Length: 468
Ligand code: URP
Ligand code: ZN
Ligand code: ZN
Image (cartoon, rainbow, N blue to C red):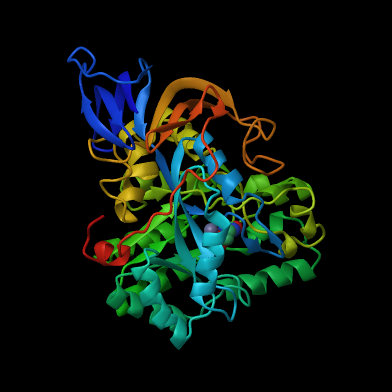
């Protein structure tokens, strides 16, 4: 099957050009001007006049079908990857979890069972390590060799996923040898729990107090600490879901010292704020960790994205229904499951708020949503670029179409939207996953199980060498 995408503006991270794109089977065969006039034939031609032709977006931080906070995140791999596709995302990297006291192997097997045969788009895994033991350190080498090169550790969530500094340091040391990469959830969970307990025990139990208890300085301190630990270990480190200027300052300082520290932020930290947590129990819809910050953190995060101190915008998609799930924390914000839905909205939110809003160029939008994720997470050449030889993961994107985000129309399996009623400019018209049209005319045209598992090379070794 050959598909010619004609008359569009191809937008890559390194520049934009008027060009046609020929897809042959699963890959991009040619990118060039006036291919039709030059005699190139195809089974199907899609007119992309007035539209962008962009590489499918890549979301390196999702939690599908995850046990957390006493319940399960609502999107399965089937519903979550389909929703992602509607939003122009054609690759996700999800976090497999080591069961407490169990092996990494058990977590990986469980995640393969959840994902295999269910995904609409290509997918890979990182690994959440909940228990750093000698056996787990050894297992990490095999997991890297299996194409799952990243390990997420937490300075947050004491008693659940928390690792102490020694455990983090040992895991970082291990990645120097096995080429893996440590991803850090960096908040000082021990100090946070002190403040959260003081607030809750004083009757300050509304969701708002979740946000207030998790001071920005607790994120800044933990971020600086994990960067220092990486420096001592000689490893790279990737800071996930960075939310505050305090944490960004720590990343900037580390990068200024020449440390291979990288970081992502998420749409919720660019477009939502502590105010959203303040509307009585409605605020539970916005409970995530790190929490939403006061609005004056937003300009700093945009500066971070402009200056490449932040390389990626991912979602940390972790949806829980308001009814029945977020409601578990009525009367005690500590019991509200942490996480927000966003996998479907990221590309449009960053286009609307970032490009239309004048913070970043359209090329930088592609960089932070697609090209950098591909490069930094071992998919360079294959994903994140519209170029001959790459997988034909493509989006025909209308930069002018406006639509209003709503739970009534979104495809994520969750009963509310954090962006309910927000009108955004830009939307994915046609989405191709390895050459197959999977979204067209607002409908899903793919099949469950089309998505393939991506084995990826050791990403920590590349980042230490400064590849990104
Ligand atoms: O609130 C969040 N972020 N939930 C998902 C788990 C995590 O820490 O990434
Ligand atoms: Zn986290
Ligand atoms: Zn997460």
